[in-house]
Image (cartoon, rainbow, N blue to C red; front, side, top):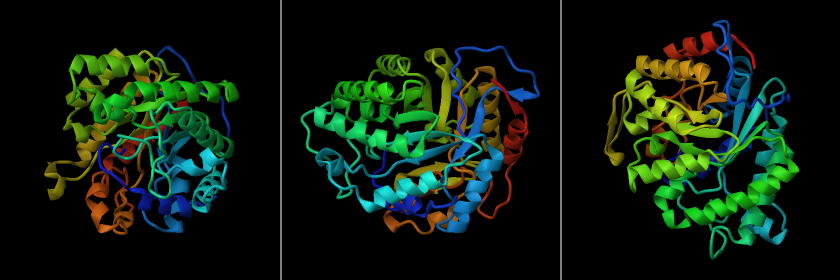
Length: 374
């Protein structure tokens, strides 16, 4: 979700702390399947647990919505990593263990889970910091001390949350853009950690997410080389985990949405999952970012309908829409220096801040009502 601004962690910690509200299913990994008849769908649908307000009532309401309107949901762990504790076998911070415990308690019995973990900071330029704001000292990202600590971190989260899919690192192509000198060491680090996790969880599908709004028509480096590098790397994974917010790329109509999706299909040969996605439904103007984007419910709905159609035709694994409801009430609690950042995604819900359904809610419901079938 975050593709270039730093430190949203105050809000994320709060959200993790209040998750105390309140299936396992075999994972679906197919290279191809015959087209399903119109009464069925061949991909799962769901949302993240991001609430729309800073209250337990909002968390409870979000959980209920996820259970009623999806058959998969995403836990997104975008918080500090207790590096010192993992490196020195010290006690874990209470705020961390409570956050994880609360998410485990609210584990939905009806839906399967995909777990996304952020290894990188919100700038996607270095490691996520520890709880004291510092990152561990290293000579290279693939130092054994970093690999061992991150393996422990991932393994702990897997033991506690028991997901059906794992996105072991989020929006990793941001590192290729923002700190390209660290990219090769990063890949070595991931190879180390993933091989050990695979030994412990041999049937768990594992991926690292990339940003389609950065991968498609990249704005850095030599375009062909960037596309080749990212696609080649993604095609080594169990599935392709995609983060996509079309408005961040300036895409606004069906033909533009489809062009980006066609690009994805042409470059990826693994099963595709949209690990997080969304599109605005209102105009967005943020002066500090020199940003002005026109948005409408009709445009948001057009993107969702395009995505759902492609998911069926291309046999996606799943689609996770980032937030089910506009989070104006939560946004009002953000620190002033974070409000501009938080406003970027505020209208991405398929329900508005007052609980009124948007056009996209109907499209979502019509597709979700079709029986899921492998």
